Length: 169
Image 1 (tube, rainbow, N blue to C red):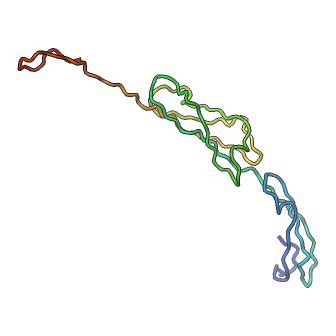
Image 2 (image 1 turned 180 degrees about the vertical axis):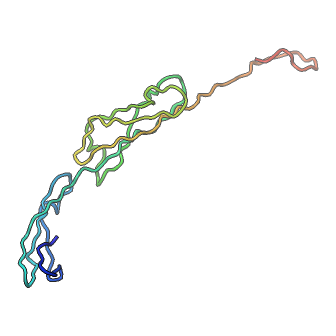
Image 3 (image 1 turned 90 degrees about the vertical axis):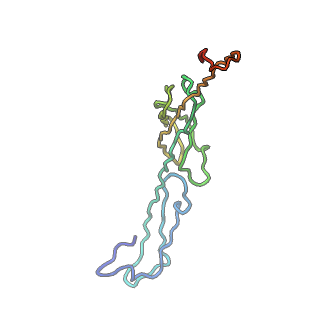
């Protein structure tokens, strides 16, 4: 931003363009960086130029932690297959290797035993990453119906040209 004009003067009275240097020109991770303006190539008939530094602040991006959906067949027991999480929102070559800490889970799924959809909720807990904050999301444990097999008991009779009347079980 160029300030300090008088009267009706605007940027049109200036020739040349500012240059920029400082730590901001190479900063890529969370932090505060200096932007230094250079005015060496600029000129104006009625003005001299002074350089003032600015600041670039890079803040943390958000990683969304979503529990993976799980499915099990009803067996009257709590799901014991283990829970896992998928993280979305990484930048560059970042992967889960930049995350420290442990995620836990809560929600109706933790005690569910009956058929239906049950919520799995991530608990961020002590997760940390230098360039990210975390947002918890929910997913579902689906308990499906178990199959019960109904088998007719085999019967036999001696031929008598009549329909079997002994009953079926």
